[in-house]
Amino acid sequence: METVELNEIKLKEEDRYKIELNTGIQAMDRVEIVSGLSEIVANSYLLMLKTHLYHWNVKGDLFYTIHKMTEEQYTDLFSAIDDLAERIRALGSGAPGTLGEFSKLSFVKDGKMNSTEKEMIGDLLNDHEELVRLMREVVPVANKAGDEVTVDLLTQRLTTHEKNAWMWRSFLEK
Image (cartoon, rainbow, N blue to C red; front, side, top):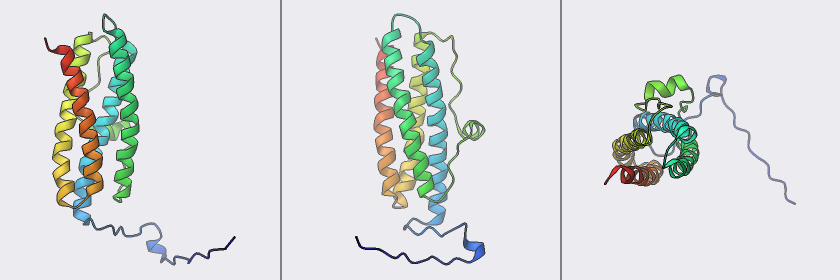
């Protein structure tokens, strides 16, 4: 087995905690992209919590269907939140991670435990559609900055949220 010698990186004391990010996306563009991604993380997290609340507390004729759909959706959201937060880190910023930060950045409101099936469905539908609109605002910013990774990530999330909204809407349509 061959031994590989690594070069030591020498940093001045004041530079030890910050190494300049140089990936081809301008700093001001990264700030704007991270701001949008942070809102998406916050809203996704609170939507995940609301979806979990409805999963646990749904009652009625559609219990099994809603119970299964909400489980699929909160599981997907949990994974997506990690991907989004890691994208924020890759862009050189810290990701929001407290309920206080999420509340400040989010339009998603707490769900109500005693909601009817239709109220739950309508609430989830509205949040998914609002999240889609938010993502549609961030995609052009990332695209203009040449941030294909964020564009791709958000395109995947848009596909999921639009499908979820369509499914919830289908419950309410006659």
